[in-house]
Amino acid sequence: MATHTDQKLELLKRTPLLAGLGRKDIEEVGRLVDEVDLRPGYVLMREGDVGREFFVIIEGQVRIDKGGATIRTMGPGEFIGSIALVTEGPRTATATTETPCRLLVLSHGAFHQLMDQYPSIRLSVLEALATQLRNLDTEGVH
Image 1 (tube, rainbow, N blue to C red):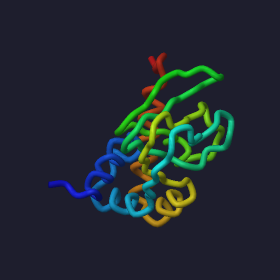
Image 2: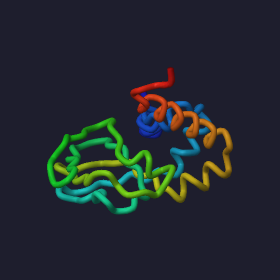
Image 3: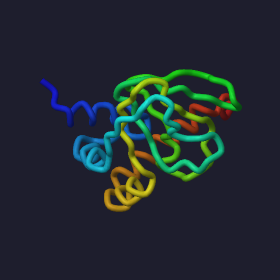
Image 4: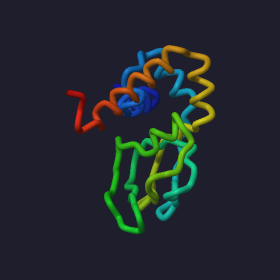
């Protein structure tokens, strides 16, 4: 039977930025992650604010609003704020808990310290970012 730690690491591995990490590296990331329980109506992030945290939903529902309109609801296994792990930029949407939620939270600062300490994590994250950018290029190079 899987342990709670194994389940946490599996959720982290589902994130595209962390998917390429080996067991040792994902365990290092797992040590930095906090698990939090939040009430309904808690604002995780506001559109336009500087992003400093990354969230993985363990339990509950989170509403995503952009420009004042709801664009989707996210649930267990989904993640919010992966770009904030790499760069502290403005949030592109507001995320609010709709139900009681349990989340994994990873801060930008702690993650950068980890990337400085483990070059293999930095390389994997950079490769994942390059892949995401390549996939965003809809016109392609001909």
